[in-house]
Image 1 (spheres, rainbow, N blue to C red):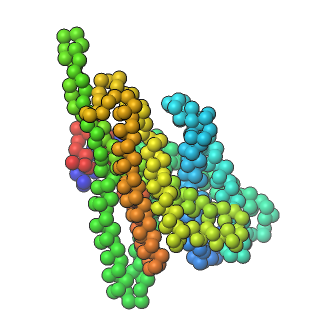
Image 2 (image 1 turned 90 degrees about the horizontal axis):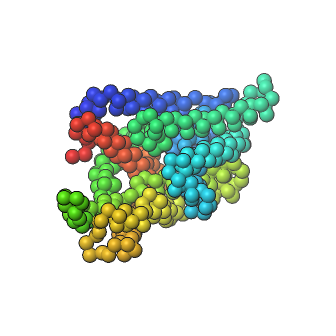
Image 3 (image 1 turned 60 degrees about the horizontal axis):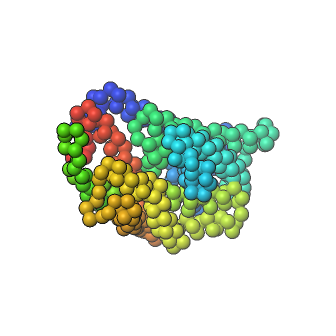
Length: 426
């Protein structure tokens, strides 16, 4: 792996992309520690330390920005929520469904609407956080030297501008860097919490030696789970395809055999991200209205058996949903027919379409259940132990980190192979 990284920096174009990506991510982490104007930093940090489970999970996905009430406190959640809404609208609103089939032009329209929707959701979240943090629970008191309404406007504007800036940075990484920008921002947010979680785990026990031993065991279990997760992430069900021989001029064409690679987990980390956003969305609504029963409901959905059941169901649902969005059996069957290809033992046309659908449905279920269990089991362990390292290295976090890392490595590898270098995967 070290040699592959060295080779990546030997290619000027790839080196510039990697350095650009690292620079943008460093700028994002810097912004996570820049507080909004007028915030009493120490008093707010102490109050946030006693907040509920839902706020702690939201803080995890912002990389600690929320607990600092920084300019990036809203994190990437408004954009992901907007993306989920647009994905769902493709099957509900005919116009949006047509956009998704119009190629690059349609994608630009969807992206533009997603941006405006992100800003709208960011505005709602910013106002909600302002009301929540000014309540008696947190007791944020601004300076009396300027009118309070002016300070409120500045805070809300700063938070929304921070969301827009994160969205812009993510798109810049996707366009000019390496990997998916939004996924890398989430990856950076999660992994930035690991050092503090390790320190917290070591000091959780009264006996320092016991704390170190428990921390080592947790890290060892995580390292043992990583190969299994990577195995499922890269597992494929290969459908054999033959091409009929045909004469074109004086040459014999066709006759080859190949396969259609169907990933067991075709949706990657998207089901985890989407499910997490929906589960913790009530926490954002609770922050807006600051109602006791709504806050209690948000906390219940953020931990405990309700959270576990919701996570399991939503992850499996989004595994099917997103797979159906990215893979079209009808289109695949039609392309095979046009190119003279066929699946052995299956008639071309509708029979081929039905066969591919059945295969997808069979392999998506175990893939979805696997990532759902990986997400739920650590949450159960954290619920009973309270160890912050389990939360930081929880199923959701580790699946996102591994999924994003594999996706980024695959993109780097494709660039390396264009220049005749070996990649990460042998």
